[in-house]
Length: 199
Length: 90
Length: 248
Image 1 (cartoon, each protein chain N blue to C red):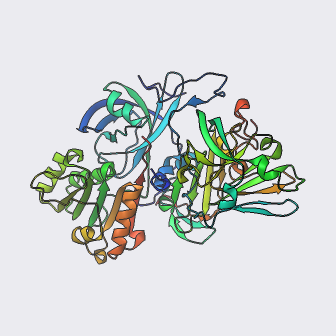
Image 2: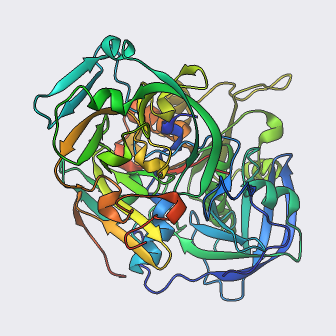
Image 3: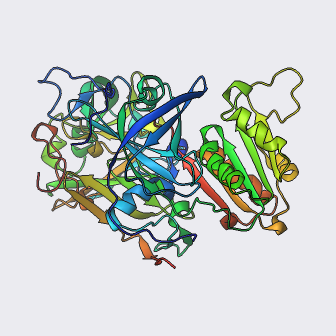
């Protein structure tokens, strides 16, 4: 531990322990973390694709907007230690998307504009656990926060909620994505503090 | 603030690289494995507020380095860097 | 010496705050003393580590404001949403202790032994490492032609204002150009807009003179200034850049 500087506190607050996982602190703002430049795909070019099932399936933006959607209120937890409670999103459940594809594998790799990927077991994105979200706080999702659409998997660390998501590649095996192939935990459950390999 | 304002350059990881390698590397010449561009590390695009540090080629934007720090461990992926020239003291 | 490797472990040193002085309403210079500080070159920075009582730590980097032969000092701008800068600018006082490591940097550095001329372009707190170079030049009695083009929002935001005026008044080859981008006082004779190619054409030497060029500020500022220099004929690789983030 370093030398304590008198009066330095940082900007954190603790929260109710049943809602804030170990090692996390609360934040009021919504930090933007980026691994690269913000992509700007025009909506007329945007598609969401599921491949690796019996047949590839793709929606245009307009088709995607017609899918049944819901409002989701969720707590989110970033591996960089901030948590934000009661965030409100609008989007399409991943169940709705996967129900339309015949598939056998147990995993998916989400792929995104800009090249980011993240891997997830299907059991962690089904049964109401995950969405493709295009609205935040009643507004269209801002590009800085992943708009036009991002994956939302609030029960896992937020690096799994891939920004600028464009589709899923269904897989038989858990193929590590962008961060999972370089130190970050394959699953990332904040309640077990699964931040890094071996945690 | 846009992610463009959030983008830094290789100067921002000078301390990190000095800590990991024991060498001043911001002036080191690097080659992007994706496009072949040669630039000093200080001129590369650095995104330092992600879950890890991402260093991208300033010409083609492809990833050249990824650095993840955990207590007692650091993961370094230099697979996007074709070559890094380390010079000795004169 | 440019690009020289520095060997050895980089360790955190205890640094006592031996002086704190406001430069502008939002900016403060902290003079530091660390027993084992190895010395530094103009343009280098140091990392600061702050530890709270519960063990929470925050890290930031700050450019060193002083010349190599001077004592160690950093100049910090308070960013309103910042976690560290409000503490350093408003709370920290003489006698307090922080941790530093460094010096860091072998690219964005200038020694008075190098040839000139020297073109320095700074935006806001980007002037700090350039000031170390200017102070180094003055301290060594160098007569290398040097020009600083310094962009600030208003006159009240100009850091080191009095010292820069005094150095320019010496007429020893150092020339000062201000641009105030948000508002200008009555009778202002300097520039009053964001840096562009036209301004650079008037202030910068022709590219053929091959000046040493250092540009520092926010990413947006640096990219605009560097693009402007390229537009008036400078080779991109001849323009040395250092981009500050806005995480405070």
